[in-house]
Image 1 (cartoon, rainbow, N blue to C red):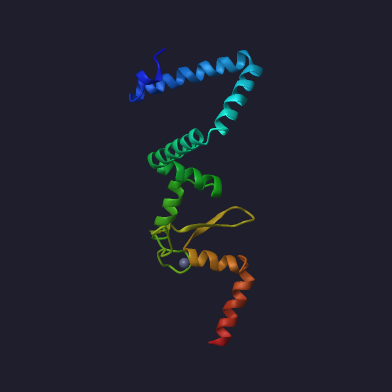
Image 2 (cartoon, rainbow, N blue to C red):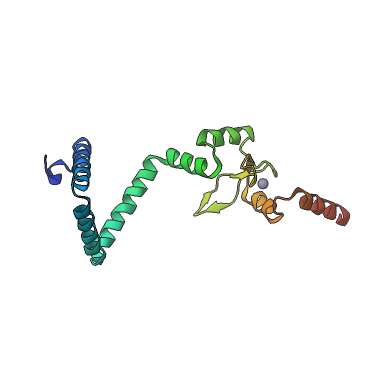
Length: 165
Ligand SMILES: [Zn+2]
């Protein structure tokens, strides 16, 4: 098998090399688990004692994660939606189109920003059933949150406002 320096830069060869290496390591681990564990522990200790190498490794991992996220932006977004609300990005987009891209309560597009970018409408879901109710702007989402998603409190607030008007 070629050395890493010889395959570096060629994505196809890099992949083949990684597959080969993974298999080799798997075999090594299963042939002598205790030795492999001990070796791993020693490697880890050496890494932890070397701040320069550790930081380099962490920076590499961060860069790799950034590249992955940039390349798989839709997939990452979809996975987040799936784990948080049980919907896919396609479901989100369908809901957004259905709501004509505005908040389900105030009927306005989102204006809140983070790091200079306008946020996407938030997914509002029932805490009990987990069912997605709709997409809300940050203000409305926080608003009903402050009223504990309690319709009777909101009705009381409406009645209070009505009395004061
Ligand atoms: Zn709103």
